[in-house]
Image (spheres, one colour):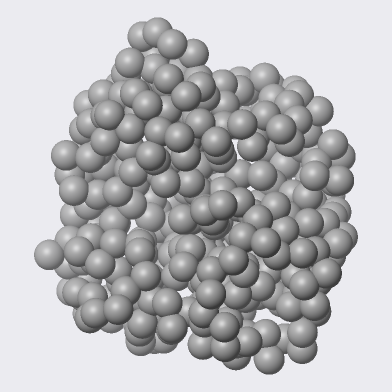
Length: 344
């Protein structure tokens, strides 16, 4: 595929045809598409912090923070602004370019806690990093307040296809999620929305998820692709392990459908070999989350991530190049440096 046109009128049949290409052909096309829109490969480092943990009233079958399930996750109240500011400043010093904050809420409620989140957004924005939040459903008014505080992006995943969604979540519907994305877009905040594979869904459901994302206009600027992290106590604790090549296929298809979007290699990376992770980057992934945890689930060691990126010759994205497609040379830093002073 050599077409560089960005489209939002994809049909499921078209997406199915792309998804089912021979894997090496699919990855080859995706890498070419990436380079046409972004130039030389580089990777944005993100960090995700759980600012309010556990006790969520939603019943998402994959989530250890749901109050419906008995897991090892302990409920923790909303963090203080000073705590978050300190963690964010350390992340910036470690080379992180996008700092994300997640709260285990069904929806944002006006009041003291939301006001505190707004202060957190201001504090993180002051570091120079991109700022992302995932707080559940929110209104247009709340989205506007977040925008005014300096929020760069809002994450609200679609998770899976509309047809399979009811098998995973019953406490809200697909339309609720799309409504929140609309509120985010109306406020001028960039959209971060993707999904999870390995929850028992079919290839048709994966295609359906990609169809939903790729027919949003404009496309989400950020598309995280997650592999299920099975957690004891959740309904999906015994879900069948998914072939990592399915993850590669999802990333490559997403890259071709949404060529100017940042495709994020997200949860589940600890189950990947170095070779599988390399294929994900070849397929067009250009962001990872670093740090000890992704909300409450373990993440690869930061030094191991730096070593992998260095061995692949991948450079990290600097704030100057941001997340938009580039036509001129972006400022990059060599992540393979043994000193690893990535905040310079």
